[in-house]
Image (cartoon, rainbow, N blue to C red):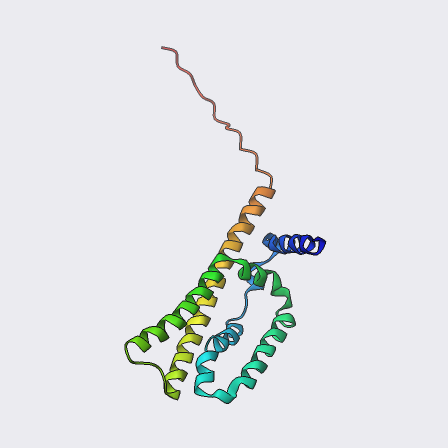
Length: 174
């Protein structure tokens, strides 16, 4: 029971990422990095087109993890925030729905994708949509981060005293 309690506490601590200390311009993930996710999103169709390509996809997945943990280490806080964000979950479920729904609809319409070229085209579409959606999600998250950071600095800065009105007011008694 103590292990579960410690795990729950650790999850709560990592869920509370303070993003006010992160500079949005420095934490932006390069769009080429999303290419890894794009290829992995098209992996189903790549494997359908070329069944012997799975070792290359495994290596690409390992390269993705290695790059994430080394070159992009300083951007881990942003990545954690993106992983925990609602928008990222929407993108993930949307991509899954697009994948399953489009194949199911094409199968029902008797236009099932069976050729190598068809699977490659599908993999390209999935990769493009994935990269586009992830770049858009990052942009939305960075805008929210910049707004949160501006609000935090505004709240931390003392209010400037209002300038005293130096004009004399005349009161006229009627």
